[in-house]
Length: 135
Image 1 (tube, rainbow, N blue to C red):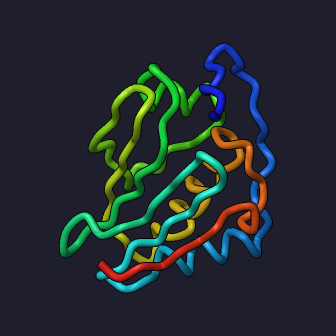
Image 2: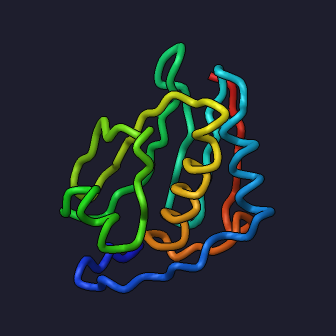
């Protein structure tokens, strides 16, 4: 069983993933519209999936009862303006949707890396099992 996020810790890691790992995330963000990319590591999971014909979503395990924007601010996760919080439930999951475009890929990849590092305490992509599955 994984530990819940300690929301009293307002000081988190600020170190980003390597440029190589950021590039891997960008590649996954550019996958076909009919695929789900799943990252798993132990009890942690994170997905990139189509939300509609013109939007993608990122969906991940959410182990807190704090509102996501507040929690992410406490843990140095910067939410890009292109992301919209579309769902969250305490101690279950959180989902953001976005329209993918050339300008947003880098900021969304960095956002994902900040979740991996500052919320999941995972600092390398190879710590995940990554699967790309057709819908």
